[in-house]
Each structure stands twice: as structure tokens, then as C-alpha cells.
Amino acid sequence: MREVPDFPQPGVVFRDLTPVLADPDALRAVVDALQDKIDDSTQVIAAIESRGFLLGAALGYGWRYGVVPLRKPGKLPVVADSVSYDLEYGKASLELPADAIQPGQRVVVVDDVLATGGTAEAACTLVERAGGIVTGVSVVLEIAALGGRSRLAGREVSALLAV
Image (tube, rainbow, N blue to C red; front, side, top):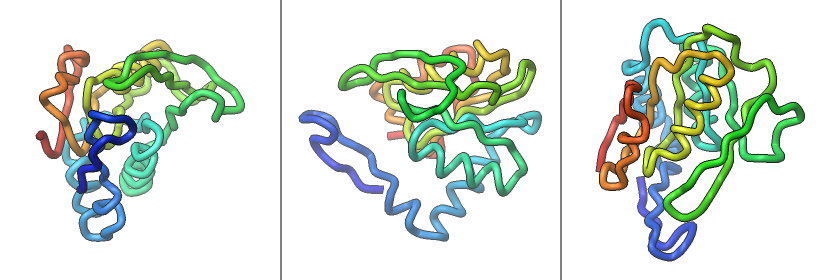
């Protein structure tokens, strides 16, 4: 993993997992470790754009989960729901595709980094408003100083690494 200072804006240190994703052994180790933390009753991965897509697809293929992409606005042809939220450096929104999560389905939210928790909280809200049951939030890296875990109170949160 590398740290990129002042990206996407001054004062923010971006944690870039590209070196991990590019290394086949490291990628396999990360995906296997994420799987070890996922509740056995899980049926669907809600993968957050964009690095969450890569991790979610690998988990879905390897362990036979469905994968639902949670997208930035304007990327889906049919949207079921949208949630706006605050980031540490601005505002953003996530959208859920129509008919992707069925009521009662057990869903884990997957992303690369948990920072302030706004994105993960928005993802959980989308899943729950669709009638899904969030079985957990799984990330590769948690930036603990930003307090994101507190926004996910009452949910199982697992991070492979915390800084």
C-alpha cells in the first residue's frame, strides 16, 4: 500500500491499495482474509465503487455470493434508491440498482478503506431500505483516527489493518 499526500485535495492522505491489487499473491491473501471475516449466512456482497467492486467480485466468484455494485450517481440505468453523505473532504452520493437486493437477503458491505464512515453508512442505509439485512462491513484498511466505526454502531465491522 502506498500513501499519496494531498489527494484528492490538499491535506488528505490517500491510502492507495493498487500495489496490493496488482500483486497476485497479495490480492489472494487479502481476499482470503476478507472472506474469513464474513458471516456464514451472507448471500450477497454490496460492493462500493470502485475498489470495492474488485474485492467484491473476487469474493463473489470465489465463494458464490451475488455481487451488487453501489455506484456513484449517473452510472446506473435503473436506480432503486440513492443516499447522499459527507466525506472527510466534501459530499458524495451512492446509488443502488433496481431489483438487486431482495427483502430478507443477508448482505455484507465491502470496500477498500473505512475513513469517516460516511460511505459505508450510506451503503448500509441503501441495503436496509431495500429490505436487506446487513451482516457486516468488511474493509481492507481502517483509518481509526477518523472515527468511521462510530457511524456504523450496531453493525459488525471488520478491517484487516488499522492505522
